[in-house]
Amino acid sequence: MNEQTGAENWDEYLAETPHVDFSSPEVKQFIAGIPVFEDQRQQAVAIYEAVRDSFLYDPYHLDLRRDTLKASVVALKKRAWCVEKSLLACACFRSFGFPARLGFGIVKNHIGVEKLKSYLKRDEIVFHGYVEVWIDGKWSKCTPAFDPRICKLSAVPLLEWDGSKDSLFQAYVGENQFMEYLHFYGEFPDIPFELMHREMQAYYPDLFENPVDTKAFSFHFDPL
Image 1 (cartoon, rainbow, N blue to C red):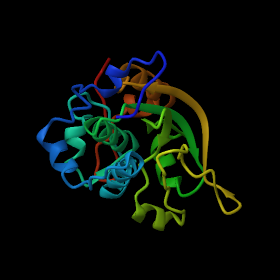
Image 2 (cartoon, rainbow, N blue to C red; image 1 turned 180 degrees about the vertical axis):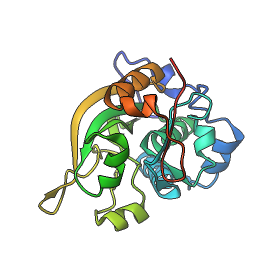
Image 3 (tube, rainbow, N blue to C red; image 1 turned 120 degrees about the vertical axis):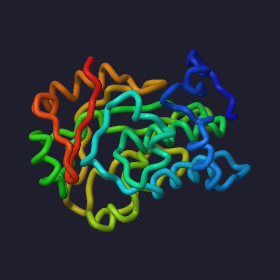
């Protein structure tokens, strides 16, 4: 592990939780497929790429329930949305000894989101997830959401991360704006379920008042 300085509570960024459950058989099986490297940055990038590329990005099936929003559940899926992929990445990073925490923000996607907007009834994508990892004495953000297939379909470049510089969504594709960050909630040791619920309900009240569960789109949540 890298040398740590400052007043951070490192234990909580390395700890296993009911949702960041990296000792579960499902996560262990996923981790077994990640190459092992001596170089810390190379190892971190391998973890990032494994999570990014192993699941199709799917923002059309959103599940906020505590019993299902777990790294062990995500590890068995073939499709996952950004919070799920970030959760699994966080579990993998901690399993390898990297302090890691979950970050969330509000973004606006300017390319290929007409279908999603028809369900959300808003331009904003609330509680977009990313991961922040401690490497070589500093925090670095990475976003494992968009897999190679989705990038190809959307005609956007694959989002790379070198284990050093922050790697958030592409702001522009050529001269066209692609992703715009509107707000950052900050970083957390685990999923802040109550905050996520309140913010999503404030932006998407129709999803909470009129639940949808179809093959094309679904939204599940636990009542507060």
